[in-house]
Amino acid sequence: MINTYCKDGKLEEANKVYKVMIEKGTSPGLVVYVETLCSWKLEEGLRLFSAVLDSRIKLGVVIFSSVMDTYVRIGDLVKSVKVYRRKLKEGISPNSVSYTILINGMCQDGKVAEACGIFGQILKCGSVPSVLTYSSLIDGMCRIGNVKDAFQLWLLQIETIEGRLRDAVKVYIQMGVYNMKRNQIW
Image (cartoon, rainbow, N blue to C red; front, side, top):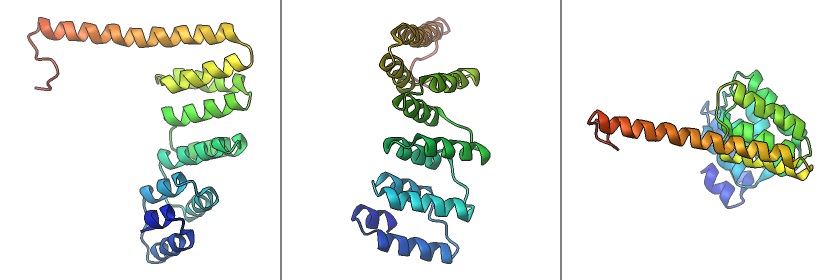
């Protein structure tokens, strides 16, 4: 019901249903929060997020990332970073999406050095940056005239992709050597 009301622009009705659910001890659930935030009802979505934080309902990385992205889209990097720090404080580890949101926001705000620091955190924890992560950082470097480093980062991206491709080819060949059927689990 909340989702339908939000899509129809009936935020007061959606809020009433939300309040009734909370009063009756029912958690609206992750989907409701994400859909409200993603329905472009910015003020209502952010107000709902604040209410949920105050209620101590356990939120996941998806909700925090959605709010971070919302703040980046409206140009408020400071609040996006605050949400990121709150997520860490809540014990929720960042994922590729939340890293990319931060990097993108920092690059849009001209804070490419800080974005490079976040990129370093991705590599340090053993994660593989996504194509969007690379694209955001390369774009940020080019915007400030750092084309040389942008090119080096692009080469790193290509190397990473090719490295995985070489590994995949090796596995595929080994499957044939051991008479294993390809594209089947058993």
